[in-house]
Image (cartoon, rainbow, N blue to C red; front, side, top):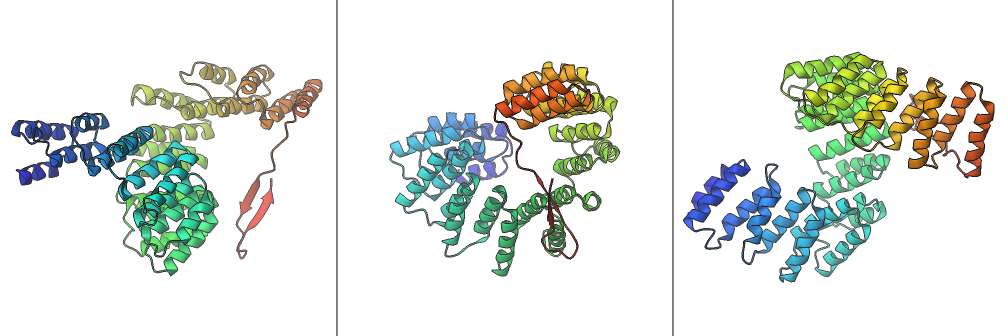
Length: 463
């Protein structure tokens, strides 16, 4: 009978399949006899599979007498995977109350849940618990600790734990690299990747995706090109996520032509591939090319567009001044594809209408939004009001921004510039006075990094 159920679970791919196996186990008496093998398989499917259902797992678990450590761990893992991080800790508390000892798997799942909750004290408390249980030096737990500290932005603690490891496997290196990139220390991540290669550890798909992300954030185009060549000489040259990361890296570094060459050479493409290329073209104002690529995606038919696809399409319409097309696509995403616009989609449309001078329509769209509008969208409209010297709508938008973010300097600057553009000097001075009286100052100037041939560090210019 055990072999029979094992063969059934191997063929299982949907929740409906699991329910059928569950029903058969009940009829044959395996559930009645409290056999944890079948229960464990059902709960594991619900917790780990993308087709699982934690609600169903809870029903099975709560009906199980004396669940073992594996079942408790599986439930904790499932809650973490489904975003119910608080419930993971609730079950951990119950597990301890039942006298079940936590093991390396328990702590690995909980450490991941803790940084998702964003609780620094909870994360550090868990670290203390691993020490008390003598599991802090276990490889699986140590890697999770390194990653946790990186995700809560305590990079010094992450580096210290990493440096204390007597042996570092690929998972440890990947965790540390991901921490550095997440904390914005991309140059350090690139240097550490070189150390990893020198130590004889070969990168995998996850390593390369993280390193390409580091290149994207740092604008390290030459390093990205070297990574591309490195990938072509490994067995990872046909992995879709790696090539998606390459497209993203080239596009974000401004090499859109090279990004498109990677895209065109890919024999297999998923939805992320199409989305990344459409967004890359749109962000660099290749609006017509972005929309043509979207049409190709629809004609290809292998991938349905999602909310990210339409974000790229609307961005292309905004940068290209294609107002009619933008209106049509915005309507189509709701009617034809049943995708509810997010605040970012509304922001793209408001930006598009504002750039083209349709300020009243943009203002009306914001007022009719079924979701709360954020300051970024209002600020986009304020910029359009300044561009088109529309004082009336600009004043109304500024009042909204005063309510949302009263101390944001750029709003005062834009409003004063708007008054100056139409010769309202008294009003301009009024806004400047309000800014000074409120102690509101402009932030430090931004910086632009420009790569120059034969200069290893480039040139940094204040802007």
